[in-house]
Length: 192
Image (cartoon, rainbow, N blue to C red; front, side, top):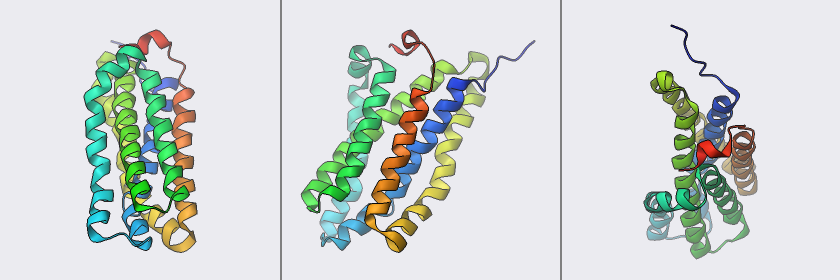
């Protein structure tokens, strides 16, 4: 029996996109609350900034079926990536705690959409006979970034500047866009 090919151009592009997406997220995970504290946020505001992201990432997933119905999986992925980039840039553009909370909500929406649809699309790309193996490799990008990116984020914030941190996070999120766009799968495979 011949094994179906797993490491196609589409699969590699989506593995890279997932890794870049998680790098942007993990750059900010330990640093956004430190940045808010440097702006004078109270303990309650810091807790809100840290937690609201997760709530918004969960809440947006309730609407993914509607999104895929109207836009398709690939456009929903791009929308999520665009929201993530916009939110990341917004962190530095605004020094108001309320604006940062709003950007965290937007970022949570973007991250929730991106992770949901990246996983859905990669499941379409992986041959059925190699789905377990493929999903494992796909998740490796997020695991590697979970190990590396927080330290990079702290280095950027503490040793360079908040601007460098937010630029780097936006840049790797943009690389996720480029990697996912390089996928050549026909659009019909991504429609729900």
